[in-house]
Amino acid sequence: MRIDLAGRTAVVTGSSQGIGLAIATGLAGAGARVVLTGRSRDRLDAAADVLRGTQPEADVLTAACDLATEQGAAELYEAVPATDILVNNLGIFGPRPALEITDEEWRAYFDTNVLSAVRLIRRYLPGMTGRGWGRVQNIASDSALVVPAEMIHYGMSKTALLAVSRGFAKEAAGTGVTVNSVIAGPTHTGGVEDFVHELVGGDLPWDEAQRVFMRRHRPQSLLQRLIEPEEIANLVVYLSSPQASATTGAAVRVDGGYVDSIVP
Image (cartoon, rainbow, N blue to C red):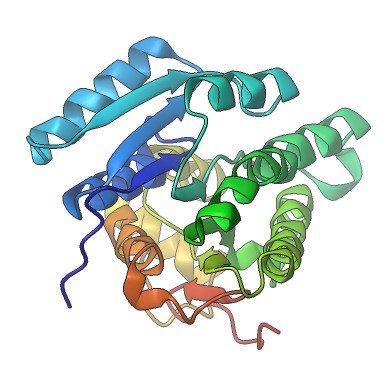
């Protein structure tokens, strides 16, 4: 399958590192003009250099803004008033005993993981439907379905994101625009390495720490390893393509077999 996204613009939120940068790199490799977003100008510049190092011909823009706020969404839209592909990857996570999660933390997770996506979809979806083509993808998590006891505020936000995706898919019905969510399992990023060591101890070598984490905390995984960001990017690139024109309103999984329940 040859995916050609030449002439398309893709905005990827939270793309200065990790999954977001891998997604942006994959989209650039398929020919899309990509827009990296994040709060730090320096980190965005470094991420753009990394992307160009693997995709020398890539057309890369950066937009420094805090998309967890209304102002940040407005700043991005002013800088990039139209896009063909929107990948809402921005998210925060972290362990916290359930009864110790404060109102402020609940709001922060909802603002960052859910409202950041909603604000951008509201801005960009009308242009996509008006042009008769577009792709919106919200990066969810297996935690949306099997809510982890150690971070129910994160699970809540990702469950909400599934509803957001399904609802906006209905709004875009029949227009040529697809809206989907990608359910990602535990993924190997720098932040997740810190999270794993926090749960299983910082003295273990990484390979052993990863195995202990999967055995204790994600035992349903058929892979029995963390997913690599590029593996998520591969699915996102496909869902961004013309070949995925019949997939919308779906929660598509790249979870390593962790989620056993059926997604409606």
